[in-house]
Length: 321
Image (cartoon, rainbow, N blue to C red; front, top):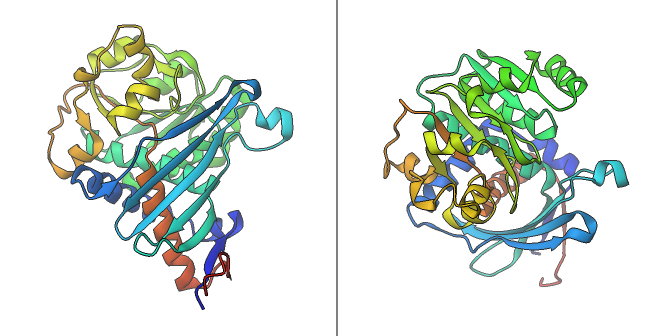
């Protein structure tokens, strides 16, 4: 009998492995650059009346296809005691269309987002970082930190900054390192920004030449974390042109006429497969919007691990047996 595997949040937590996530995401970026994946444009369902939105993200990579249905509701914690981001992933067999699995995608999203920053730092940093700064000390910062540990080992000093100093101090106590100002965090060898800001929080004066920035927070129109001068001075790498222009860190400067898409040096996938070279003497920026192929690749790894470990619940979901 054919069945569909159901993986809850707790199941995904039991399977989560950041090194596996980094490998899956790196492979997905490379497959996309080689033309071995399909990924229609992310679809947004804007809900300004609820201060949020939904995104539908379909793709196929390797021998799987899937779609993620995920939201972004920044006021959820205070209004409903719910996470700002929640998601569900459906993984299917592209040949027969049979649903192989349905799994929680909230943790999946956090894992692959953190992993993408780790992959970017791996390929864009001039040298292993001695210091890594985190601007924004929310949930995503934990996964950004874990990804850099997975890539570089636990040898770097971490500096956490947040609009709430107490939040930064708590995360520093949990993960190691120290809390600091935005200027201190932005002055590190690697800087990871993960805020919901709609105005720059990192000034050009804070960032040194030769550093690397993972700009992770701008994932919707109007969002912006970096002083536009940073982009003008930097070697900028994006994950996908259409998404970056529409909703990445470069979206506001492009809209304002301060930046142009043709200034971008290339995609991270192109860097990984060697189709583009990196000028590591310059300040580098990775503008991340989040790609559907990252979710598909990691979901496939999680489902494979679940079968191997006997995790999850198999059900006859569609009655096709």
